[in-house]
Length: 479
Image (cartoon, rainbow, N blue to C red; front, side, top):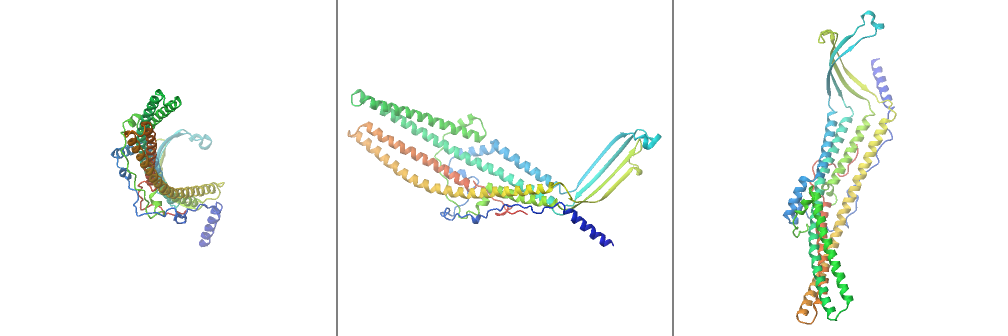
């Protein structure tokens, strides 16, 4: 008979638990397999180059840049935001971890009361009740729901930690690019000053020719226009220097006067524009954004597991002991003591769909995390391929521009020789000089692009992010 009762109780428990069901709910997102992303043609020119180091900017060859990046990593307020988010995520993981263990509480109170006379008659009178208690509660977590919730919180904390590291990587890259832009702005300032000097000399020669009746007023007005245009370019170049210094001050987390203290950069050496041969798979561990996205997918999968366990019955153990007394009696007397202890069973029977809605939300969060991971992966791989394509194009442009500058330099030298030999005019030489200045401006622009591209490629390769052994697998899946 007792066996039949146990069987009936078990059947009733399963039937009641089935009233709140998770049937039919599941996530739809599937992480992309990196091997499925075709990149063999785009990444055909890979090498045995190493991944960027954590202090890759030292390879650019400017100690002032090294000092500025160290200063920015110390003082930029944006890093404080990322660090605060990481600490908040760690605290949430601590809360989830604490929920897995037992809890012990205690309390004491004193209260005055007068029971109704209808119940006690003449014995009803005002009296003080004094009591104290201690309680113990422990959820056995039979299905591992609380453990899964803790693991999900730990995954989110790991993602936040990686985000904080990513913020530092992004800051160092942005500062290096802004610093290179400052160097280019100074070069532009030199070239525009040279063009202004050339335009002024040309105008003066034209004025003399007009006075001598050789040229007319049209040529003089054209010279005036060239001088005015050159003056405008000088002002624009000076403004570019100020803007670059202001950008650097922001990245340093300082006031605008800090930017004015930055000296003219040295001629930077572009980083080695090479890509390790173990792409694209190893890119997953060297890009902070990909690592953080994978941690979030992992955490979302654990959240689904935790939500599913709320549909199942659970057992918890509780105990309470205390003392109580009325009036002036001693609350620690034997008669005033009480206690209770025993397990309790919770059965999810009907909740108006709250558990299903919660699980559906967790499924959606998983799908969102997977979609963001896939988007980040596709974007990262294509970014590297695009930077490589830009590198090839830029090398061709630099070679062609160098030939143009060499030709313009030779033409300028020949024009000077003709002028000194009395064959040509200095006005003709200044016209050739204008072509040389234009070629030098083109070369300076390409050199600046080369520095910027090298930094962008380093960032595309992770900017020196170092993978850890406990990073989730490249193709995460939900539990």
